[in-house]
Image 1 (tube, one colour):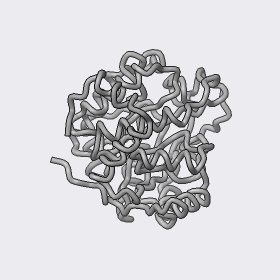
Image 2 (cartoon, one colour):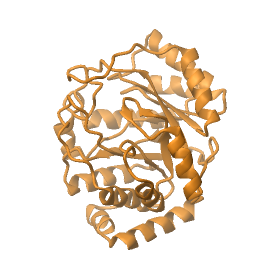
Image 3 (cartoon, one colour):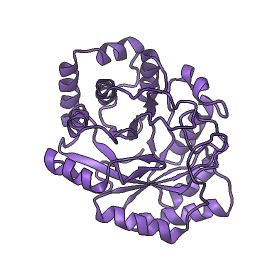
Image 4 (cartoon, one colour):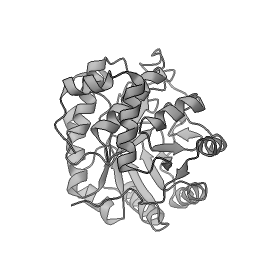
Length: 322
């Protein structure tokens, strides 16, 4: 396990001949995980739209004119009902996402804590992505039974200010430190297709792989360009670039769960098979990821059946936190 990968090494790994890169990544994957198992998560948008941030890729930002319908925080019973359905369909983790800049100590946060307690009691991993939070708030989530907290770094530190101006890269890192202090597992990755260059991608991977411990879950998202956002004209990321990112992440962070995340809709079954061969071992299930399209449950059942994949059980990949 290494935490000191440099940009030259990451560049060399990423640019290996593609088949050799996939082989190396697959070998690392099989040394640390069962190659036929994929962790399935359901992402629930518990509060949609109206976010004060200016993330260039996000249709939930209040300042952009998109087709997203703004909704208040969901009630607990509704979230529990969706979680039960997700578990019956093979999901072992439920991710609760709210379009907030930061967590506030109010009745809405209290309701989220109740959601966490209720879904955790169903023997499911619960992850939250609620924006920035303090050490005290992270501890409250931990005490409620939270398993993981998602807070993506999105892109390289150098490119960050071109994508988001309403908070800083350091703000992201501060929240991640607070999550670790509460001994929660970390879900942290990024997005490719934002207009970044290769160097930005390598810097993002270096930032992730230099965290000690590595994030337990690393989502690799490809931009879903949404009309009304500043990045609506961005071209889709070619599958080969996605495969190279997943394979490189697998080699750098061998024990992390690498999630094939946003942008999976529209990828062929063979495209996704390449991603699994390259070391991806987690997906989001359900027709939507917060507000962007995702393959249907039926499509994923066919995908798993065809490729001989089985969903992991809850907490199967948990190795404990010191």
